[in-house]
Image (cartoon, rainbow, N blue to C red):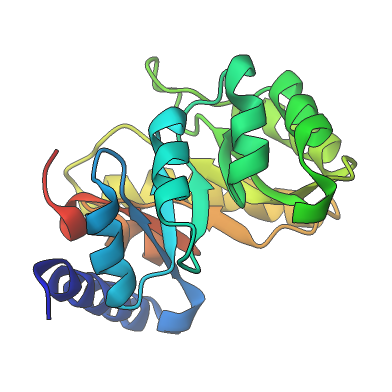
Length: 226
């Protein structure tokens, strides 16, 4: 087994242990391997070890990587900021966009999504803890944006994505993730068909899973430091 394959096994073990402690099934949580800044060969190694879903922050870099790996059956997730001049690249190359935080961006993605690809899966990025350096709508704004996205024919609203400020304490990590879960449940109560709560990274995946995450975004624990 390759080094990346071994690290993937360890991450899956962490996910399974966290799910068991939270009384959840390990299959309820999807692992998204964050491959930003790592080359195509690292993705190939992860794919050979069974990983199919990959997250990228830098759109231009990702598009070049996607082209080099097009023979593989991979699922590509855009998890970085989306500027207006990059929406076409996202619409034409990715299966998911986690970082939609403006109505204008959603509208452009909807207009530019090629019909033959089917709807683009979308998560609303929410600045759940009010971190000043973070992108995302406020929790108060999230429902209105989610409702608007749900009406766009070439987008499929899946849920929300959060990147809270780092916390060292498990209880503090879980508390902020619980706020995202509450917002997610509020969307469901409003009649929105959402199923994805994208939260949790290498340092806090256990707390995120305890709070209800359905997709954890893991980079360092799989590919190493950047």
